[in-house]
Length: 154
Length: 207
Image (cartoon, rainbow over all chains, first blue to last red; front, side):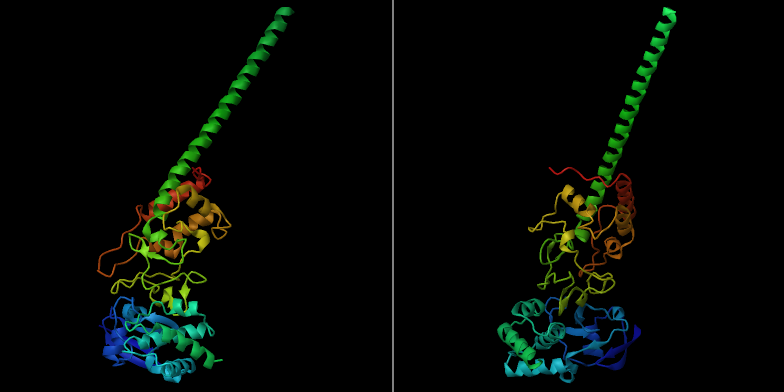
């Protein structure tokens, strides 16, 4: 066990965990922030996506010991982020969600995309969200919602 | 008097013959030295080539829109794409999974500034087959395609570049087993590179 001081959604949080523990489990089990989901555990599905120093990151494969001082932002903070808010509103307006399990990861990836590419093309969206799987196959609505959020952010 | 002249002519002739012999012998020795040095350089290059085409190296020197992974050099999972600068695309960057060091507990390899080599440094064709030795050698020695590296810079790169060094400490797979390393040790790789550089970076002929 080792102690880590984390910056999660702008707050300092201290945890005492094994250094090899993936960030996902620190968030879910130690900090009780369950908005970030466990899907595959091997970075293949994107359900666990969070932002680490602004980079969309698969938290299931990031041992907490490698996080360092980098700040973490999770789905819980998206409502207070202008881009995050726009994406969530677009998600509601386009009724994207079906079962919803993958959607926090989808939204985190969509926000990361829009912060770097404010007017994404279909190809941009398909490539950037290509690692976020949705068993309900809501991909068409996801793409529409990303375009809608981009329009709202103009 | 005629006898003296004859002797003189004989001396001049012998001297000229010896000179010609010495010149030709010297040229022949020099030609052999150059040929031997080139052969030694080519042999060293072939050792270097076995490392460059090992999966730990060539998986990120693709000619396609994606990296590869594993010893079988399969396409990288999760629909990962090259992106404009070889570091993926927004929301699907290399750095989104690959940290600055190996994550052995989760099986994800990592190193500083994890990224694909640019297309100018591809060592495969578009069907994911390794290019022949001559083609890789020409790429590596062409400043327009190798990042403006001189022969000495190539040696330094192979000896010190952090992502090169990673190939010999590639960490563990998700199942906990150790990833395979290139067929030479890093010291042998650097020594072979040095012999190749000192021989003038010769490249095999294109067949």
